Image (cartoon, rainbow, N blue to C red; front, top):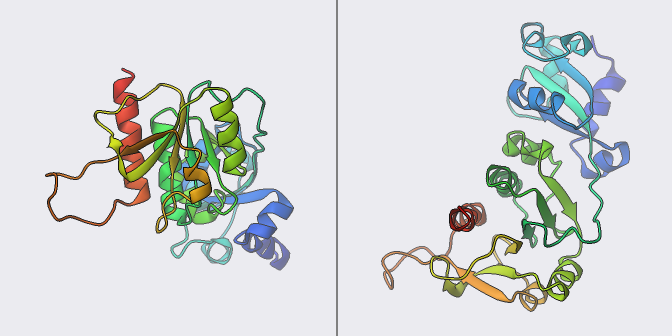
Length: 251
């Protein structure tokens, strides 16, 4: 049986300040925890129901708990049979890291589900670095971690002021793509195998300060042209379309 202190320690990680202070985040689910245990991330503790522990690697290091204790520590509405505490990875910004490949920049994307889905997309399309503005949702929020489906173990997420990052990219001659309603048709625009793709906030789009640093404005055309349609696309859906077209061109 878990002690009250152990339960409170896990529950505190629902809060960003506590995650930062303790350097830990919560992951739940057999598949997700198994992926993290087999990744380069350091899994500090694993709690599992008796019937789930054998499905995990290194099962001798798993703490078996009751269904009641799992309900007490779970941060999900429906508790999973497995929960892990994982050390938050540190990915320092290195000089010269821009320009090596394609990267994403998220300008105040605030919905955890959207952020998690975008990180999963980045993983799928081989984009290893995602740069987030300070106001973007915390990638170690439990909802984000669940939505990444394990991508959090492979995609490096950096929180930084985007203006400084994009200014450096422009100085280095790197293209900075941005998605806009009036941008050049994505399917006819000249794309590149390296550079940064900026995706904006769900309601406001890309901020004026960041817009000023975009030198390649692109847009996803509606079909058929000129017909009445939705005002805009969800940012995660737009990211999927844009990333897919970039990768299709690189084949």
